[in-house]
Picture 1: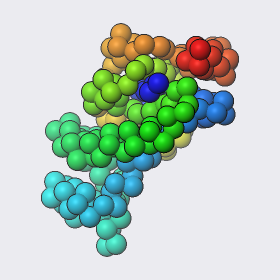
Picture 2 (picture 1 turned 90 degrees about the vertical axis):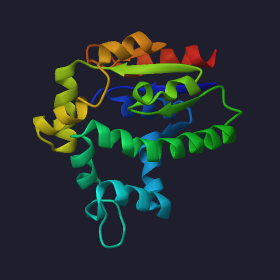
Picture 3 (picture 1 turned 135 degrees about the vertical axis):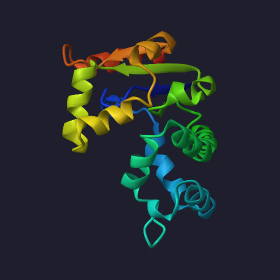
Picture 4 (picture 1 turned 120 degrees about the vertical axis):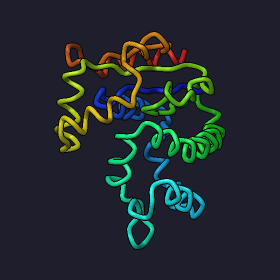
Length: 192
């Protein structure tokens, strides 16, 4: 079974995924895997055409902060970038899933699961949620960005309440109850 897991920035989906991994579940991290595609000559060429040479250094290595500054402030540019990267990620995740076909289930972690429409390629979806103030606090501490930069990133994500209506399962990460038992319960349900 292919299970997708998502959550808005700062909800703790990576933490939840690490707990699943500790239980023996294979996890595909879309954002991390997508980084390798920025090394492909055809992707470098396409990204330069859209955003200019300034988003790469003199060795053609992506300057993520430069690209982020552009796309998180321009939804059209973000959509254009996703049109380059998302098909490559989707093809890669299916090849990866085939290698783990003996597993009861695998997890695909993606911040933009619903926004990208990728959810239709998976059997089930899990949403990790957290209160907005807590999410912001986590990201400001983790990424050392300003509140304005955080808000620019959030505006490119579907509202959490909308995602709650679309998800098959929800794991609250609100620091009110221990997270590990919640993940274990979900793992047991998916393994049944």
